[in-house]
Image 1 (cartoon, helix red, strand yellow):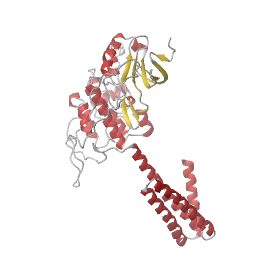
Image 2 (cartoon, rainbow, N blue to C red):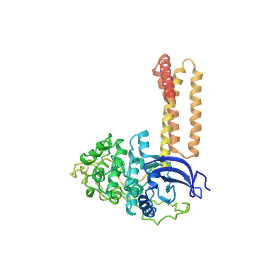
Image 3 (cartoon, rainbow, N blue to C red):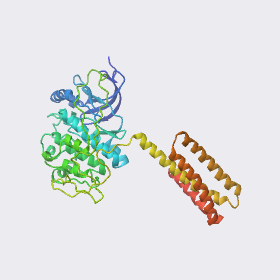
Length: 443
């Protein structure tokens, strides 16, 4: 007999969260791999119609594969505790990330927009509609987005699950047609994509906050607030947030205009414990350059006109494009970014320390000449040791900074000694010491 921590072949380790349909647990499969197991709530598990729909959809959902999707790996919809198993992505939900760190900008915003568009195209190609795409269902791990819970909301939407008359979904991310009681198709996911990306880019909801009814009214009758969204992205979001679903681009068109292509539809992963599912990562094809649907960036003669810039009502506008990013631009690797950051820190420390050492040595020159020279000698030894490390690592940049730092300390010492009196220099030393103490305490 299985212990209470076991559910079929899965060992539940800890509760990750709870949603409208079930509780999500971190678990281990039969081979010891971590997975996410969503155990359906009792009121959902008792709905035979909802489970029938979910069982019919699971095989389709298991065919969805992509680098930005937490794939469905397994499911058991019989017994007292039905569950669905997906790939576990260790990261933070997008809404939590924005609440802690503020809006997503630069390359991270590009990754988010492209990754979510690619995920939606993969989902739609398999004949699945996510139905509840929102920041809470986007996990950010290693700066890349991953979509979770796709297809489950749509499959479980039934008469008894929604017996209260409530619409399944989150205000501000539900498309106008869904709020008006119509079926949610792929176009509704495109609307949710735009609302999610707009929230990430601006750090606030495009339709504001407040009671659900008020937000729903704005979605149907008002235009979204896209202030704070970069100009390269705003026109595309405006198209996707149109009230008429037929006027929105498809997920495939989104992916094409952002310069990505979805992976092909995969065969279903084998069931029975989740240990044999395919773990190969599907890598999107990088385009050679722009998508022809995206307008050119400003040239030397001024900003280019964007033929695709439109208002939510469909009227063309004149939009100046920025050079913040353009599709096809190679991404820097994580190691390259870390290397640049280390170089910047090293440069700042050497420049700052050379000024401080030069100032202290100049202040001590008249009364403590030996101490003044000792400071310069010790600083020179430290820089020589760092230059040796630079030679071993073949870092010309670091070697050059060390050489400039040493020369700068001597130049500051000689210049300050000749221009200012010892009293003035001692006052300057006191000010620097005070600032250093403040910085240490503040940090």
